[in-house]
Image 1: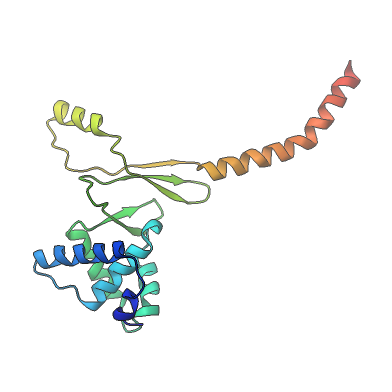
Image 2: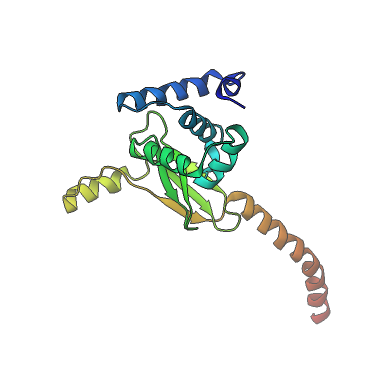
Length: 183
């Protein structure tokens, strides 16, 4: 599938974002090559997934069969250097890529579930006060920060609660009868 076919039927928001990225590249004397555009489109279409270079490459191979993994890495490095994407690591040793949210001066934060691995995003700057303290107390000018909260997501908590209640329902019936028997 070529890039002309890719753009048919896509929402204008996606096209607007591709165009803004094209403008950023041009402002830094880079061209939006077909390979770069295809990479940007895959990233935008799967923005909620925090894809690795290898995952991006596999998705791209369906659209641009002759693209190489080295091209994907070079494109991601360029996008990272231009702060269009961030490199993120969730402790699994795999670098993943995350778009900088438009209109946000800082990086957003993540919630990572240690049970299922799901990653959610927080788009509020929860560390403004901490940054101010660091700047005042240590004379350190904070330009950005990265924060990942590790814990258990709502869905996993609900599953664990249901499992406990399910296991507890078998023992809760036995427990009162034992108590009655002991009285």
